[in-house]
Length: 220
Image (cartoon, rainbow, N blue to C red):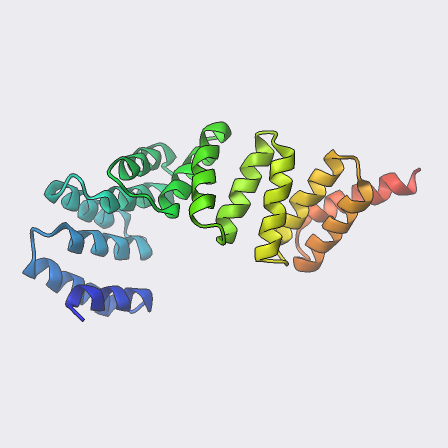
């Protein structure tokens, strides 16, 4: 295994000191190869060293303007600092340069969600959900975006998919409870809110919704 792959393995195991040493050696031995800079940038993102990570990704882009994963890395730097407009631009560039993975579509969608551009976010979250149908977070965020754009039936089906992947997903139960209320099925809503609280006793939204339904039912 070469130094670059050894470094990546160390990073996966969170042996950051050893990974740093090997990435540094890789860059010194191959100063014109963008891959070393990109991987070192990814490590720096993991340890929240945003400015250094940005420099490494930019260096990779200087060496190869088509290095799609460098733009993706820059997007993550800006996203983690809640600079969603700059992150959005970098994720778009990564896709334009040929990166076709669920993560980049998901992250682009999430930058738009944070900017409250739900309709614009939807196609990217849909694409991410198609590329990674078993990723719980992706499916949940896609379902949430569907609900927020008024596509209630589709949102309900997606939240059911989330529960197939993770049956104790409290937020999916909560959102299915909200859908049930939308359909004026208080009994089913109560079931989902109770289930959300079983999964997470601190789910304040579910507790509040449950209390409201119980109060309404007792007043009938």
